[in-house]
Image 1 (cartoon, rainbow, N blue to C red):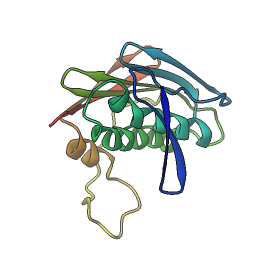
Image 2: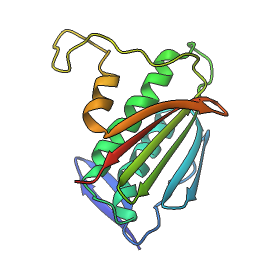
Image 3: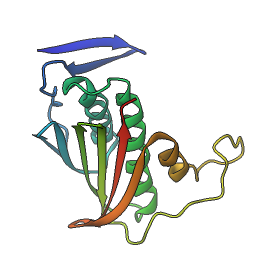
Length: 165
């Protein structure tokens, strides 16, 4: 069963029976259900990001994890996807793979990208009213139990674990 939830001026389709409500066709986005989550291969776009964020938010509810993790998982995925676009050359397609899974201890968010190098930490306070960017790794520290950077067929992957409380 898929339920449509109205809130914040938008419609959110979520699954409540162990199956995701996959998005309709989005150019440059291919989503497959895998295990207790999904894998999304995409070329970065506003439409693809929106669909992936909604799917990410629905994984905990769909697969019996703490539903409150959905918002945090969505924020982590959104931050990582946005960082890839900002670090990529302008006016070139940006390939990404996003995987989100409900696991026994919470939710895993994995973002694969082709950007060379490791993420770098900026010296920006989370509550800075001046900074326009530079909070990404601080947000990962705050929202996740742990995160790692590993090799991936696309280049690298950032794997984040959000623990159920």
